[in-house]
Image (tube, rainbow, N blue to C red; front, top):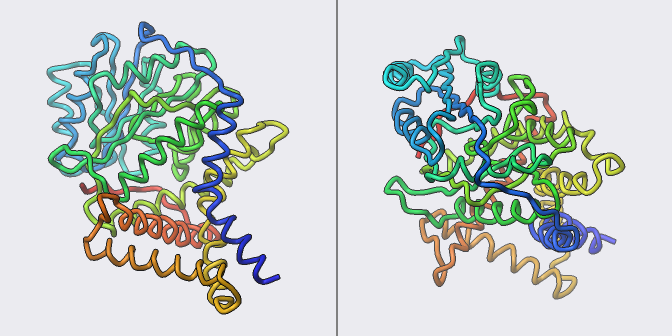
Length: 383
């Protein structure tokens, strides 16, 4: 009985990372839902950026968006300064003086990104609202690629493709970047089914009529797409809309960010638990449970499997093989911590380290969640 519990826990822990993507790919082949894109579809677009002390990045970010391969007269940009004190406001005002397409709003006192978006949307004149991070740089055709999907009336929300880069602009190959490549592949797979579950808040777009105000503690990158699904519209992935953003330069920074995101995701999942009803939401309920709930909680069955395995290590080769796997994982994790990230050109140690970081962050976030803690404010990413 203990042995079956160990095997079941291991399968359950690995399911959202390995088995679910396989089944999702299979379902996508059987129930493929095309998207009717049209790159000649050019509605007015409002780009909204929430900024807290982003003087180092904000000018480059604004000019990057204004220079997009999109009709200039159809672009509006709103920057919400969330009580910035480092000169962010002055930079935005100087750009506004030369280009009236840029508007500055100030949120005082500081309330966080979600409240900033709620503040900005009533000023948006675009049919499509694009959400951009304050330190994000888009490829020139990114907004055109995002918007082309809204020619399909069934599409309500579109998320682009994030690439983490080094400050010199080169795409990095560490665990964080490899994880994003995996996520992007999974989003492409889920799009074939109907809707994706996770999005990137730095390069997202939504129909203006689909936006609905959220509580300041809610995670907009998570809650708003789920609201769109509730409206029976699709949330999809657009791989040609590319965002490049500096990677975090320390594991500690990445860990803190992952704890914050996981905690807000737990609250979002709880708020939108009605989407787990398969009678009303069909396959998406399975996707949400698999991709989010079971992934964020995977640390529980994985820990149970690891502990039971050592109690049974003398009971047979299966448990000995599992124990060996744990030791190899630990060794690769240590190699990554020491900076030796690659084995034969494959970033396996960094992947192991990042997998451990994700699960540790989820465990800490879950503890905070069950204790009723919420996080509303954020700190700028440090690349």
